[in-house]
Length: 333
Image 1: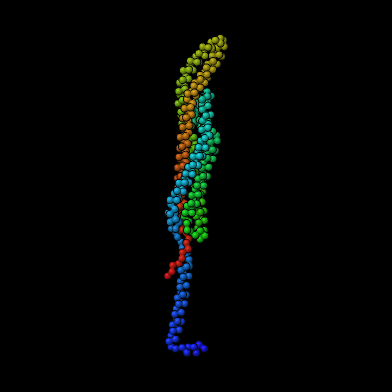
Image 2 (image 1 turned 60 degrees about the vertical axis):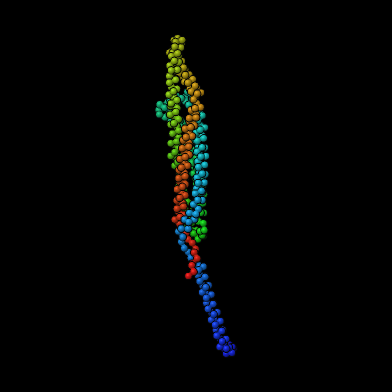
């Protein structure tokens, strides 16, 4: 039948239909090649990108700096609060120390301590008490806890900034290894800073406070001693004369009266000294305590900031040195 149709066609009609068939075949062939090329160009391939994280961190630099400063402010606030609480017990002990200092018994104990070169230890025990060391550990434990919280928040901020537009599923293993490495690194830094500061600074500060107060107390003792010397010479002489009235018992009366006069003079001079000088001495002691307290705060803030800054830079460096995987569309040839 097809042969009959072809036979009936003129030469022109045959050429026409042949041209149509050829053009259709060419079109179909081109469509097939276009589809193949399109599929090939849309096929993703795996590539490694060593700079994407660095670019992300560069863009987020100002935000990372702001976050760092905010967390440092939080740490400084924790230092102020805990150091103030730590020294509040010392400040509370000032009044009881002054009561001891402005007593006849206290004066003789302090004089004995001066003679044996243990006045610093005597004052330190009175002001700081036996629980001060444990209070120091607790205070810096609280500061370390706040420091750790701030570090973790800052690390999370760096992580989010560094991994913008990164395929987390594709890089899951890489990111887990990186996070474990950072966690191990920060754990070595955290927890030991406060202990080192407490062990290194607090004993020195307690010694400095005690030594400065002892020096002030020694100067005051010298003034009182010169006053007492003349008064005691007169009173003990009068007591010896009064002892003659005891008759045959003068050998008992004179020493007793002399001792009574001696300690009476002590009590009078101590009371006068307390009346005129106690408030001033208290002010001087509190000034010494506050001075050393501020030194401790400033030193702790500097140490924690330095440690935090070093951690932040090292963690960013770890991210920058991490090569991530990317899926890239193959280019059309």
